[in-house]
Structure formats: C-alpha cells, structure tokens
Amino acid sequence: METTVTVPVSFTASAIKEVNRLMSAEGFDKTNFLRVGVKGGGCSGMTYVLGFDQKQENDEVYEINGFTFIMNKGHEIYLLGMEIDWQGGLNSRGFTFSNPNASKTCGCGTSFAVKN
Image 1: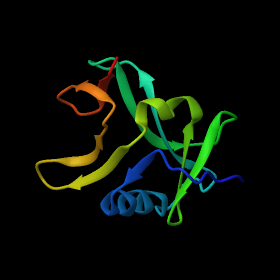
Image 2: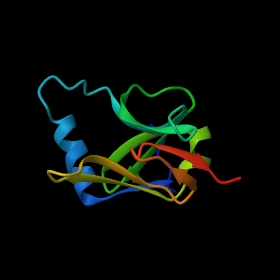
Image 3: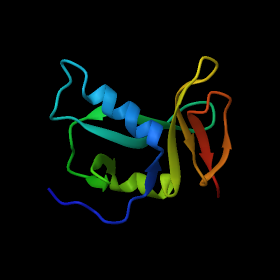
Image 4: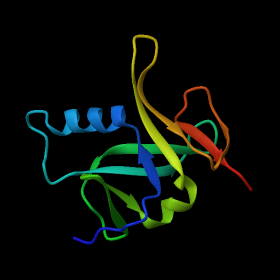
C-alpha cells in the first residue's frame, strides 16, 4: 500500500480518538478505511463525506502519526487545509468540519459551497 506524505486534511486529537473508538467496536469490518470526501447535494451545494468504506481505484491513502484514511484524489481541491474535529458535549455532538475553501456553509455544518 502506498502512503502519500502531504496530507490534505487534519484531525484534532478528539476526532482521532472518536474514530479509533468506532473502529475498535465489536463487529467492525477491519478491511474498511475511514473515508473523507465530498458529494454533490445539501443546502449549500456540496456535502462532506465521513464514513468507513473499502479503498477504491481513485483513492489516495494518507497517514498521520499512525492514523490512516482514504480520499478520492479529485476531492482534495475542495478539502485542502480542512480540519476535522469531534465535539462530544451535550449541546453539540458529532464531527465538525472547518474548511478554508468553503465560501458559505449551512446551519447543519455538513453542507458547503466552494469559492469561485
């Protein structure tokens, strides 16, 4: 498996801890990778993808301090410099995305538009 040195997105310590917790759950398919990406849709035009999936032909494998994830090569332009965080509080719970490429985001925080 090839590993790329330049990592397009970063994860906070709490995000890595939560992903590792999910991956260590009983019954987790150890052949899956964490996928970071985008897809069309949502109230602002594009939606973030964060989930577990099999590696595909167009995917690049990235590693940060032993933490591995995959991303379609074509998605890097939309996500370069993004930080993924995990909020575990009572009022705000879930993964959050801080994307410098987003020209606007929606209230749910998972949909964005890109700068022209």
